[in-house]
Image (cartoon, rainbow, N blue to C red; front, side, top):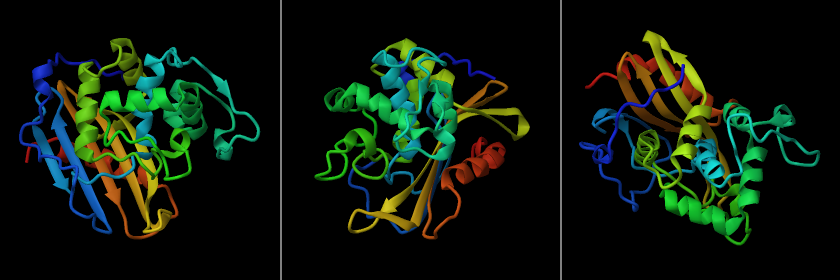
Amino acid sequence: MRYRLPAIVLSCLALPGLLSFSAHAQQQPQAFECTLVTSIETGAVINQQGACDQRVAPASTFKVPLALIGFDAGILQDEKTPAWDWKPGTEARASDRKTVDPTIWEQDSVLWYSREITRRLGPEKFAAYVKRLGYGNADVSGEPGKNNGLTHSWLGSSLTVSPVEQVGFLRRLLAGNLPVSRDAQAKTRAILPVFDAPESWAVHGKTGTGYMRDEKGNPDRNRPFGWFVGWAEREGQHIVFARLRVSDKPSNEPLGPAVRDAFLRDIPRLAVHR
């Protein structure tokens, strides 16, 4: 099922009742969670639980703004174009060593495809786009001294975003009000994976998985995190959401899919005003 946008105007983009975000949030606890659900049309908070102002790396949820950038810059053309072949020697999971198009990229969360987009953009254009979109802290410089912003900035180094900011960004995307072409926004909405959920909910969303950083800036395998962000519809009801879980225990499985699956089970109760 494809999402049909309701009529949304610029004045709806405020988030009434939503906690205000501070760029200087308190020091993060070792483990925390957030679930934030709002109305797409009005921005009214339907359900809010946990620490929703804490910024962490977007990980693969960054494929949403990166798709916008790719389409707007003309690197991506449509749902199936371009289809790029994995090149031997390129870092990739075994399952990602294949031909990938924009839909497969989002569905299978293929990192090398993201890096090919950023490589074609170049550092200056990439940084300018992220700043223009106002995504999180908009810092794509990468790890200090490593000059790896094009390949690592969203994976646990410089770029961070909070659940509050994820929801605000997605509402602007659904309204077609981001500072890129409307065509790029429509094509981005079209390639996001769609999931069925209980009580006839159709959920469009993107997972993200990663690790928090220790004091030396290295991935802390004892603190995995998982994201699931997106929007959902059912019988005229439209919501936008972000769920983030930061754990203080190692996990043998990617945390993003686990967070997604739990959210899909929970959506009937989360979509009801509390």
